[in-house]
Length: 247
Ligand code: F6R
Image (cartoon, rainbow, N blue to C red):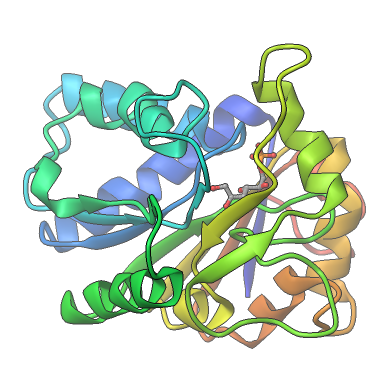
C-alpha cells in the first residue's frame, strides 16, 4: 500500500485528479470505477477543470459506479445517477453509452446484479477503482458485519451510513434504506485502487483499515491485501496513521 497525506481537501481533489488524468493519458480507453459522496467532489471538479483547459479527453472512457440507492429514480436529485451528471458527466466529454450505474428499478435483483458484474467483466474489468471510506469502514456500500459479499448485491445500509448520508437530503426526508453495491470481489478485482479519505470523522476508520487487523467488521481493511492500492488522505483524515506517511 502506498499512502500519501496531503495538506487539505483541495490538494486531495487535485492529486486524485492528477492520478486519474495520468492513467487516462497512458490508456485513453481506461475503465474507471467511481464513487459518489462528499469526498470525491473535489476530484470531479478538478477533472472538469482539466477538461475545460484541454488537458483531458474522456471520450473513450468507460466508467462503472460503485453503488446506487434502491428506490430513487435517476432524475431524483439525491440519486447517484443525478450526482454523476451534476458533478462530472455533464461537465466533460464522456460517451453516455459507456458510463454505468447499478440502477435497479425492480424485477429479478440477483439477475440484475449478475449482469452488472458481467458487464464489468466484458470490458476487461476495472483498471482504476476510486473509493471513499465510510466512518464505519465501509467501501462501496459493503457494510461491516460477519460476512462480506464477493459480487454486486443488494444491501441494507448500516445505521451509521443512513445517518452520515442524511446530510445530502432535505431535512425530514428519509434516506433510502437499501442500495445496490459492487461486492468486495468486484472491487478487489480492479487492477489499481485509489482510496480517498477526507476529514477527521474518517481518521479512526482509516487508521484501522491501514494499520489494524484485516476483518469483515472493517471492510476497508481488506484493501491491505490488494497488490496495487494507493491511499490519499488529507491531514485531518490521516492524523491517526502510524508514522512515516508524509507528503
Ligand atoms: C459512495 C460510496 C461510499 C462513500 C463513503 C464516503 O458511492 O461508495 O462508500 O464513498 O460513504 O462518503 P463521503 O465521501 O460522503 O464521506
